[in-house]
Image (cartoon, rainbow, N blue to C red; front, side):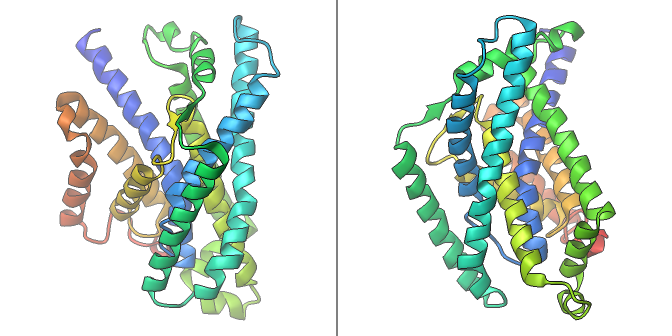
Amino acid sequence: MSGLETFVTHTLHGIQYGFVLFLIASGLTIVLGILDVLNLAHGELFALGAYVGFTIIGYLTGLVAPPTTLPTQLVFLGVVLLGAALAAAVLVPVGVFLEATFFKPIYGRDEVYQIVLTFALLLIIKDVNKLIWGPSPLRLQDAYGGINSIPLMSLLGLTYPTYNVVIIVIGLVTVGGLFWFFNRTKTGRIIRATAINREMATALGVNTGRTFTLVFALGAFFAGFAGALALPPRFASLDMGANPLVLSFVVIVIGGLGSLRGAFVAALLVGVLSRWAIWQYPPAELAAPFAIMAFVLLVRPEGLFGTWGEMG
């Protein structure tokens, strides 16, 4: 593999990793920016999405023909993506239940209550995952191999997993859809108005309780979607939620607390730069994201794009 091809491959790895980070961090950013709640259980919703995705995708792929020809490979890919979307949809009522039962009583209270509560939920969701799916890691290796057998990147002369390209495309569509939703739709503008001035939104007749429930459901959806998408090339395991949670915090701090645009830029920045750092110096895998965060905060302590309200 030539030097240029190696560089392109690692850059694509970083972009793909950045989009996965954005899918996770977007839900955390939306909840933080509007509800002003730091949800430590968000990483376990990501893990729950992976487990639910394992069940749904595993069942659906068993209903279709093996991916041996291009048409069957494309059908297989469609089934896997449908399974990921269904897994994310399962997380929506979970998010609604958590918000209505646990979060609603603590809105406006000291952050210590939020931290203790969300940490308790983290442990509860992890034990629920263990109770339902057991302690052993689970993997959809056949799904990953079936999708990568689609000769997409070979047309460009690159040896690069097709499934990673699919995640990049889905990430682009998700980013465009989120910005369209918050900037062009009535519901999105109501959510933004509530984030900027909750009291004024209430005075104008906005049902903030319903808005908060919708926001938490959106956060749970994107966490579950990211987990289900990330499942094929990796294991679903009980400890898989911790690292994405920490990196999501890194992303939203770099981008600016509550800024969706900042989360997107920061996720790509962390994804690409950390993959470059690991390529040149593998022991930098753990330190690279935090080094990027430290550098950005030294230059812009408020993050790249400030707060949700400043994002507009």
